[in-house]
Image 1 (cartoon, rainbow, N blue to C red):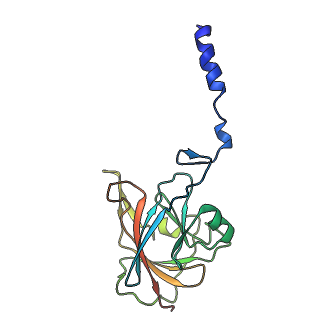
Image 2 (cartoon, rainbow, N blue to C red; image 1 turned 90 degrees about the horizontal axis):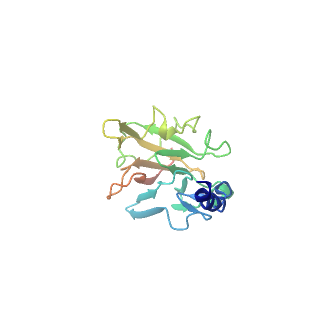
Image 3 (tube, rainbow, N blue to C red; image 1 turned 90 degrees about the vertical axis):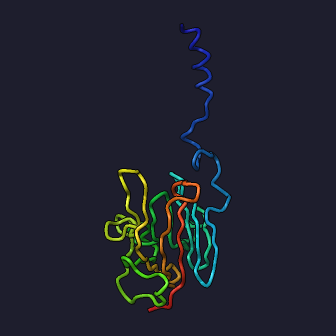
Length: 193
């Protein structure tokens, strides 16, 4: 019996030490290089789709540009406004990043098309939970019966790291193929208060 197990034990001893590799959803050694955001601009409104499927790393966006920031760039510049990882959306400030200045205002059932100027007050930074994921500001409802996320009609006003204001409306959590964490959302710049 031991003679049959010996080759298996020797092969197992040759496996790489997984504690020393950096993995991004099963691809080890490198961070993703393909774009994780797509943007379409029409009449000042940016429609975006983000691939937030990673269970290990968030994706970052600078709303002002708009552009995606890769992990190392977001860390080095601190110029990101929002990050996405699965169903978590974080703002660059407060509990998420104490050195960040991004603040968020939640308007339940706000009218995206009608809003042209940012409100003057009511903005908060992320606390122990991100504003987008708190009970008061949560962007989705999770249906335990069918195990699906449904987007709530909240309107978010984000004061960015550059001090500009953007309205943000979350779209579907699933892409057209039904893949989870491929989140659609739209945003547009607002006149300051």
